Amino acid sequence: MKADELARAVMAELDEFAGMLPAEIEKAQKTAAKSAVKALKSSSPGDGKYEKGWKSKTTKTRTGAETVIYQGAQPGLAHLLEYGHP
Image 1 (tube, rainbow, N blue to C red):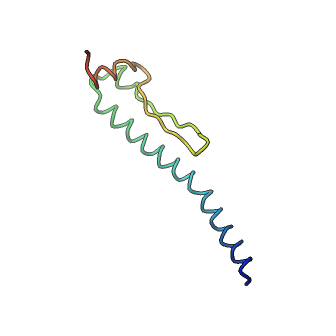
Image 2 (cartoon, rainbow, N blue to C red):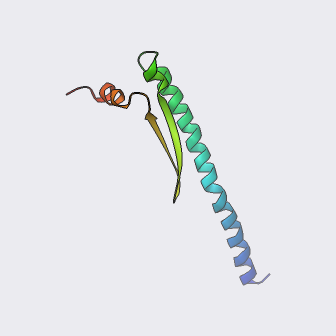
Image 3 (cartoon, rainbow, N blue to C red):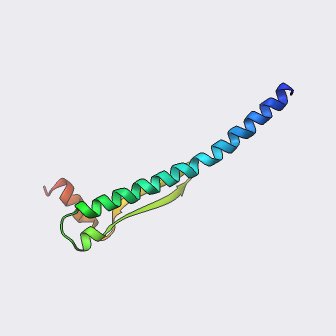
């Protein structure tokens, strides 16, 4: 095997590996977000609209994916409960 052929073979393997990595990261993000939302729902005060309002959303970005956890039902209340009222 010539050095040129070896270099092409190594690059082909690295390209294949690099293609798999973003999908695995996105899968891990979704799993972590699902777990965090579950924990927030179980530890939120009350048992109504606020507790059920925790959600997560994953969006594709230029460099991979971004996952955000947010309070969809009462977003202002989350801020007040965490930081208090001035």
